[in-house]
Image (cartoon, rainbow, N blue to C red):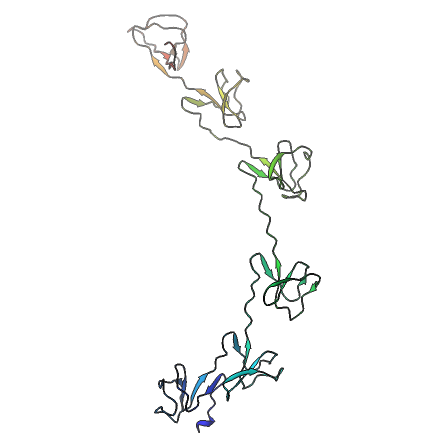
Length: 330
């Protein structure tokens, strides 16, 4: 009865004198196969000596078992149960049914850093390389579509991507459609330096990176908004009259004396302009007024026009600018 039991595809029946090992299975009638616990004994020595034992057939390192329905190809091997060994299969082209066959597993071919593998049917180039089991060999003149099944893999060198151009702090790249003007700069990638444009002024940019290997950049205008005037200064508001000593903020962020427009009103689009903030003190009783002092009249301070002494009966306050000496005689 036990001889009629099919041990299943990929297994073989243990002989009566073989030692039972871990992973071997025993067949329980009406139940199924289960792991045997009679390790180290032979099927004849086991208390279940009338049972059928089986062992999974391993294809070996570097091989895989074929499954029913696979076609046998050259190089496959068949398992011989009587000899317990693998031999080269002779029936190339036959379909696997019950006999065990194995096939060598080809190791994964990696293209290597900086390369990509091509797909069958891709057009070959002279600088592509094919795998020869040990090393990569140049395709050379064997161009055209890759259809040769004997060629296991073909790789192609990947061209490094062009680095993105950085215009630098305070600049922006000109976009396609913009006109090159005086003050713009071009990048010659051979030298890696930005230089002032000359002959290309008036031309329209076609791309951010042209065929002439030039990129163009333009300085981003500095438009300070409410800049800090600094300690001891205040910003003039539009409409105030520009005076001598007032300072403007130039494009480099420096405060410089205004040499023009003195006496005219500050316009909304003028450069930021600042003026020193004067400090004053009130004159005390007994002090004499002098040129430059101011007295308070009708909600505003006006210059004094004569010299007099401030006494206790004075009802009009008088002030004098505090001058800080930075060196020299007081």
